[in-house]
Image (tube, rainbow, N blue to C red; front, side, top):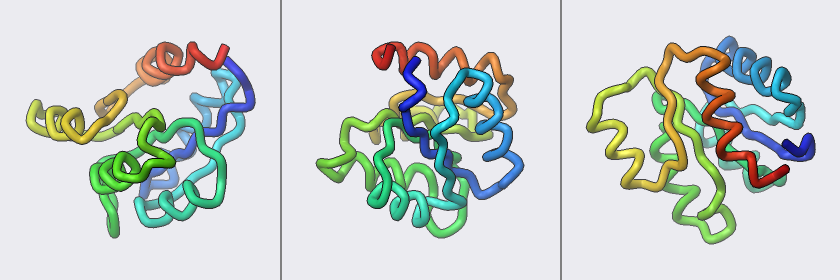
Length: 127
């Protein structure tokens, strides 16, 4: 995987952002930007080149699924890989995210191996 890939990690809990950042670093991915909610993530998207979003579902101000809708509705970002991370493992939540264009989905709690497995498949195209 290319180390140039920029990943946006969006979660309202700093502990979860740190955990995901550590997993990404272990995969050799160190170009990571963070946001603590969907509104701030949208600002980051418009200020930085981002190649992939890893986003929590439940956050204040703008939920992950609302951010997903906004991303998919903007021509600049419509094809941007988007991984939803959430404690909501119910089928209806997965279906909602799928209908709105999520690229992949992972439920909490997850292991480093779970997340890296999802990402390796998605990022294989970056060499």
